[in-house]
Length: 117
Image (cartoon, rainbow, N blue to C red):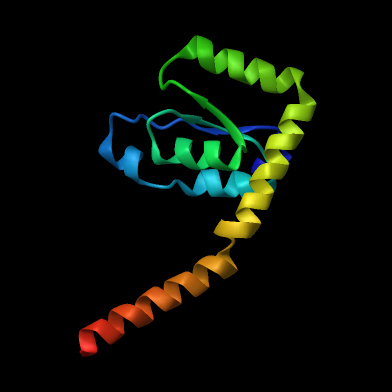
């Protein structure tokens, strides 16, 4: 279903602590699919999206801003394409499962070694 969309969004409420510190799978899915994503400011995801230049950031609960951003993305296919391509590149460079798997295995190995000392 997500693969057939032009834009995805994950506008979580930053007033909820878990939303400020978590990394929703939906955002990484959008990057993997090469789709631009819209996220809420004040979450962990806004930093990642800005750094990768793969989506747009809005104030949580600001309906007018969200409408403006979605309208802009609807009217600018080149922007959607650029943001989506940036997301896919970022996914391949930093968030792909094969990379994450290696990182997790190395982390677990370090933890085990620390406990054996």
